[in-house]
Image (tube, rainbow, N blue to C red):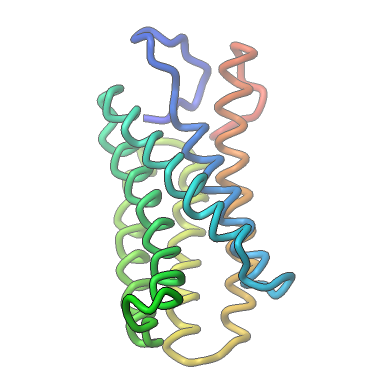
Length: 192
């Protein structure tokens, strides 16, 4: 469980949640700056998706398992592998290993991630307001992106980009709040 108030580390294992939240948040902001139309899809986004959004979150999830946190394990490893799979969907066709996914396939992919996120949102109701915001905005983001692929309406995708920036920033806030609250031994940034 991600703490809502500062805690002393008792098990000798540092809190992996800030790493996972910042990795998710920063990668999400950068991808959604692209979705909002600020720059093209490029190697910066793909590299963040592999190394920070992907691998760093998987590592955070594995550490969560050592802390006996099923929610953290499930969330961080799942979204880490989401980022790796998303990069795979973009890069694999470039190598000619498989065809690029159709719009209907991307719609199914984004809908299943939206459903997973919606289900995980209910776990946040026992945690804190900051995580509720992250998971609620992420659920909306997945369904907006699915709607873009279902309709071909680029305006929905651009709106999703702005909504995704909010989602990513909320995750960064939650990650930094965890770090600062722990470092200072008091609530510096409230998590609600």
